[in-house]
Amino acid sequence: KAGVTQTPRYLIKTRGQQVTLSCSPISGHRSVSWYQQTPGQGLQFLFEYFSETQRNKGNFPGRFSGRQFSNSRSEMNVSTLELGDSALYLCASSLSAGGPDEQFFGPGTRLTVL
Amino acid sequence: AQSVTQLGSHVSVSEGALVLLRCNYSSSVPPYLFWYVQYPNQGLQLLLKYTSAATLVKGINGFEAEFKKSETSFHLTKPSAHMSDAAEYFCAVSPTGGGNKLTFGTGTQLKVEL
Image (cartoon, rainbow over all chains, first blue to last red; front, side, top):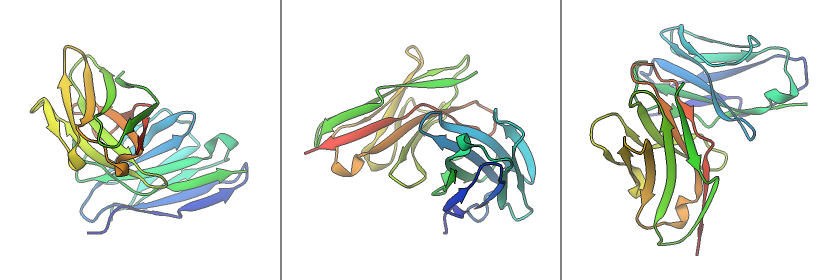
């Protein structure tokens, strides 16, 4: 069974640009969550989607948005990039949204903002 | 709000020695608790989880953790460290019935020496 895949793995952008990251969950998984990992702030929850609906949202500005498609694939978008958005963005999928299902993490997308 | 505190950002043990990584949680009701491991340039992998069943939880790779409500702790242990255990370990909490949102601790980097 294929794991969670994230594309691209590495990305370099400049301040003010926008970026879209993609996550394909494990087949059959309907819940997708996104996390930001930085040396200073650690791992922080961004949002969770289940059946194309956002179920939970973390404490991030509106520049961070996401969506989920009918095939459970998810994208997150960051507009007007800032230097502080440089981070490893991790996607995790699980079967349902009721917890405490195991969440399977992808390898992440490393975003560098110059 | 729920939170977890990991004592010791760096822990060093000798190969074959006991591994003890500390985690304390803060929650008004017993939450779900998790331990994840992250190897360099990879996503997170679930080691074990507590979901209010048995207080002693056994996980993969010989790790186990004991839920102690009186101490609000969920420390991770392994009787005998192996070189391959060198990685970063994260304790995480999610609310019961609150979806898959994970709140992570700051992580503990485990070093295993010969």
